[in-house]
Amino acid sequence: MRTPISYFLIVSAMLFAIGTVGVLVRRNALIIFMSVELQLNAVNLALVAFSRMHEDLSGQVLAFFSMVVAAAEVVVGLAIIVNVYRRRQSVSVDDASVLRG
Amino acid sequence: MPLDHVVFWVFAPVSVGSAIAMLLQRNAVHAALFLIVNFFTISVFYLVLGASFLFAVQIIVYAGAIMVLFLFVIMLLGVDRHESLVERLRGQRTLAIALGVAIALELFLAIRAGVGFATKAPPGFDEAVNRGGNAAALARVLFRDYFFPFEVTSILLIVAAVAVVVLASRRRRAITRAGSEAAAAGAEEAA
Image 1 (tube, rainbow over the protein chains, first blue to last red):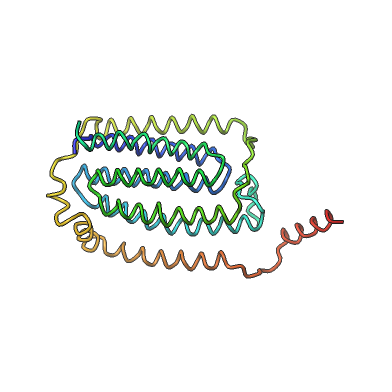
Image 2 (cartoon, rainbow over the protein chains, first blue to last red; image 1 turned 180 degrees about the vertical axis):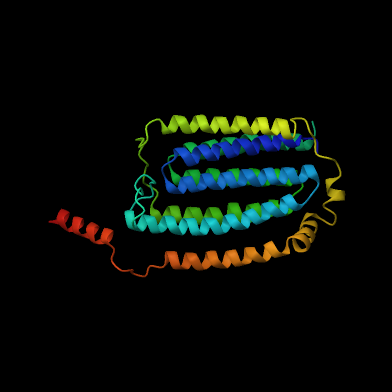
């Protein structure tokens, strides 16, 4: 492989920054959640790139674990969003400004 | 030009472009579809980096299961809602974009300082580390060194499944004050 490892890390950094902006800018809770997924994937990409660089598979194992945790997190998060929607008929995070159900 | 260079330069713009497109989409379904494109490009990067097992897992778990779940919830909640462009906090959007650019620059500097822009991966990854295929090598590491965390993730998945069943059950709970207020407001409007 002749591509420098840093190229993958730069792509990962850009995706992470885009995901951060998405979390901060968007109002729709679902799209905020998708931006969080984008950030998780960016970090996974960095982990796999580092695993290639250091010739150690622990990075890939960690990326695998992070995928499992992301799956669990998505399931619980989407259930919470559905519940909030049932209460308020809206998925905008501006409307859910009070913790009281 | 080596082949992995070509693959990288084809898929890197697609990856960043689809992420930006996801950010700019008003429609949640379109945003989810762009995110699926992004996940596919990331899986191609995994393949280039010699992680063929994660390539398959990325497509099956992320592009398959997780995004189908997202699309399902988007359809369930209705897609024709547009978010308002009114800023509740003044200047939040510009500040957020400035912070995003700052974090990207900071990460570039960290990569430059820590890895160096021209550092290449050592050759012979497939012979030295991926002996007997990536899945077999990964399984050796996973079940020898990381067996306990692996078992803990199974508990995590069970707990998540139970939590979702509890959260999403349609069982009528005790009527809360917010619910009764909403009902009263609805009755007034009807009258």
